[in-house]
Amino acid sequence: MSKETPFQRSIGMGKAPENIKEILKKNGEIPVDRFVGGGEMIQIGEISMNLLHTPGHTCDTICLLLPDRIFTADILHIGQAGRTDLPGGSSEEMYETLFKRILPLSDDLLVYPGHDYNGNTNSSLGYEKKNNEFLKPRSKTAFVQFVANFFPEIKPGMQCGVKTIVGGHSGSQPTLQNALGDLIIDHMQRHPEDYTVTINQLKKRLEAKDKSLYLLDVRTPEEVAGGTIKGASKIPIDELPKRAEEIPKDREIVAYCASGARSALATLYLRARGFKANSLDHGIHEWDEAGYPIEK
Image (cartoon, rainbow, N blue to C red; front, side, top):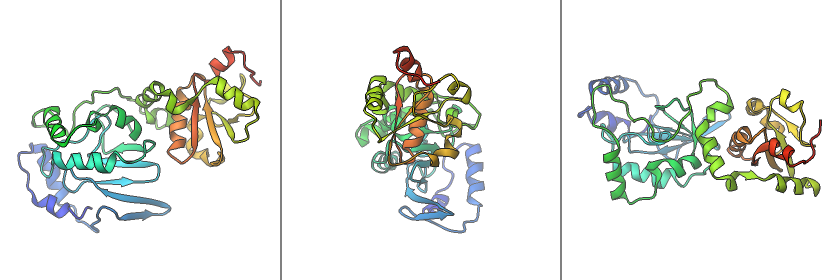
């Protein structure tokens, strides 16, 4: 636990509702084997995690930063952030955390909050920077006022957050496609210049026999049987997490599917793991409709 945890436990319950007091009481009884601080690293097998001290929701909140993702506990949710009016909370400290520790991190990081109120599993930091109201540019004074107006009054049975004001996804199957969520697809489709190549751009590179290009078909085998773009490697999107090592990191990846939704998810997944990847805008359907060659 954080080196700040003893102080957090000493603060007391304040005006927290009974259900929160019960949680704090149980947490305070958990014995601590090791206290850690911001800037330290934890090694678990081959996994290295950097620790970020991120106060705001509580004074001892810690985020876990990995090369491709960040576990944000209650300091940053999908579409919002944690409350600051419970014991150990501070809107001023949350401002410092969000704007000086979280915002400078890579857009491609996957964001895993401690919990979510709309059934989402995770987001991306790039999406949150553009859509999360807590990350909008504003002064510290304006931020403190925003937070004061955002959360409803503390009442019995309350949660740490509220229903998010942005779209969500409630799928429950543990696949790459629904784990990332519809909200990220929406974000990428509204900013195509950051994530996509057009069919004309791809055609020119294929005609030039650009050897730096790696074409990736992420459709199902049944779809692939109907025809592919010549030279494409084939990895269905839900097999991508266990087969990513088959993809060369020294080439530029253009992923495609039927219409661009699944390849957008594949692009984000691969970027978070250090690949240079883009998605074919509008997918193989537009490629086929333009009369460009399909290999049966």
